[in-house]
Length: 102
Image (cartoon, rainbow, N blue to C red; front, top):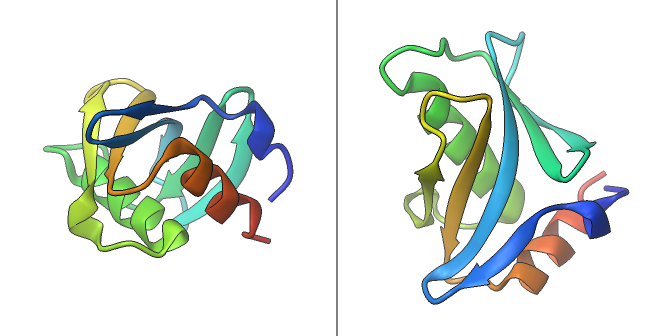
């Protein structure tokens, strides 16, 4: 994936925080690409009762090749711009894995 150097990904004591632009109600779940400093992720789940947030976390985990339980919502539960914590990976590791996506 191109543009990963522009993504807002930062290290924390527990892992890496990834800024995400969420698009709910899409035709399918997928990582769309880089949008500004966010990773744009689309999901077919509705934005109700946390369904879209859970689907986005699962999609991000699949893209990074990690267990879905290691990706949790850190900020922005009701906003299109969110932050997800990826436990067990550094910001550099997340960026490298995203760069490998086509």
